[in-house]
Image (cartoon, rainbow, N blue to C red):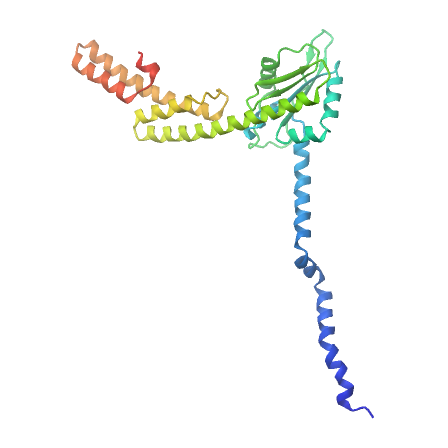
Length: 297
């Protein structure tokens, strides 16, 4: 005859195991995520990549693409397409599928505009697009400004599709007109433009620091120190389109105003025949405003 102790012994042994299995079943989602956290991370990364992909592959209108390139400090692949000359664009689209070219396009802003023929023989720009929702954070040029910039850089429309590589300031670096695109030449132009943009970006960072320091010195009435910082910034030779260069010109304008006021006081002493005071005033100006173009005056 089986005793009570022998009958309940298997139950005591297997009951904890059954409880563990039950708990695992109820919380399997949590357990799977805890054991395989990389699955969730991978899914998140994939979503981010998919979100970014359309922006990287997108062709921008000139009024959006040109200021975007300056903001991102990236070169531009510019396409001015004519309805009568579609073949260069077809060749380009095929070339962009090449893996090596796609890598070279990794940090390049793509800008495209298509012109259509008019009855009078001219070329019609497409109507300016307006965003459905205005976004103050998105910098946007007017269509007229973009059109003038493109015509100044690439010339007036002549009916032949133009494919060009521009730097971040929209200056032409390479151009293909009316012939089949060379894949190697395109990749080389993109790489050179990207390298130049990296160098210009570093110069812009340096000029930002110099102009910031010049502004601080001007606020402290250290005009001589401000002059020296602005002259160092000028040696970087950035184009006027660069935001730090525009700031340098603004600060130089404030400094020039003080210089002109000091010169006016010195000349007033001179007109009143107070030559000693005039000489002292001119000497102080040379000390306080050591800027070569002003010193020559």
